[in-house]
Length: 601
Image (cartoon, one colour):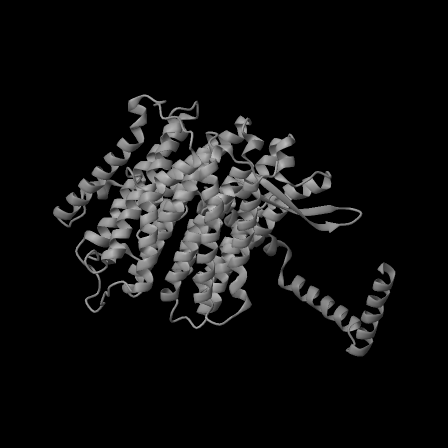
């Protein structure tokens, strides 16, 4: 039933989307116009959010609108938009984060001659994500899905004169193509069978397990799950504002959002839930372990994103999509803030990203240092910061569910590693004595960076209770777990924090010679865990087998005499068929083309 609430929600969501596109009408002062447009769209999107708060997220219904697209004798395709609690809550968050990133990029990209073009690409990136979260069927979802993929390719390879940036952009496209195959196979099977692609129709049907596995493949590649994760680390070759937007509220959360959307399809399929749970636990633990010994500041934050995406998959695997969505929303605030802070630090240190060459920045960059500390503590799940409410709830729910115990242990191990690498980054970047080149002058943060960082820091502090109140207005207040299980996640976080602090203090005050533990530890294993572990080994093995087979085939069938004979035959064939009569060739081509058009028209 369409009510005033649903009509107003749909109207203001449409207005927010079209407001985002307004800066494209004029190319003058594009960055300022884009920032103002996103800010205005944010205010418009708050109206449906306030209405949802007054009505309660548990009592809301969605409104679906159909726009005919292709109507002919063989197909009847339409684009469906859907405005439900997920769209209404996530839209203001995406606009808020993008507003901060656009304002930050006006300083960060000030020396770039194509800064207006860069801002337009960021705005298109946001527009594609709005299309994705507002879609009511798989066709419109696929348009937004491909849109964020294309824009990520353009933005990651922004510095296309650098070989590493071009290779990283290509890697992102290739890994995401694997997931696109799964989504396209689902679309083809639906259109071939004559069924509708709308989510409401899918929920009323009974799809096969293979059908759902295709969608999980798409989500795993887009959200950088284990075996699909290398592109996410390589994407750090792009500008820092791109990394902030990519990791906080656009592309990498698109896969998780897909599974949240289609969750009713597999809520009673325990095989699919087990796949999501196991994949998420492995991803979370592996990424967190890799971040412990990573030294690149941006890659540490990127690996933390991968670990948190795994935690969202764990929430989906234990049949709690609302908790996954809760963590996705809270993750956007502190992850965008961490990336923007890293941009300030790296920019001030002449593009140095190695935390071993940093230190002592707390007094030089007080606002950025404070925001790094808040973001790292939120990432750890420190009580009363934004991620505590979602992260702790996921681990508590996993402890209270009949699930794979190994997955739970991996999730707890990931939580422990998160505390270790977060404290390591705080200590190495902010608290340790300076290790930079003496000629580097570190300046205070400019005004263009203070506003975005302070806004995101405020969101990281007070956003948790607000999101919890909006998403779970009728959440039971009674304890549902034994005390020792309820405090397990927090106890592990605190213990890991203290362990990392003691280890850092011991390394600082001990002799500089390598410790016995460092000598006994296998450095090859640590290096392998950082450099893609299983993925590199599989790729290298496949390359060796292929190269061995090709070499033997060439040695057997491609001797000098064979190559000469083939070349002579090819030259004779080309000589007989090509006489240089260009006019005759063009005449034949156009006559044939004319006949083809005449036949079909």
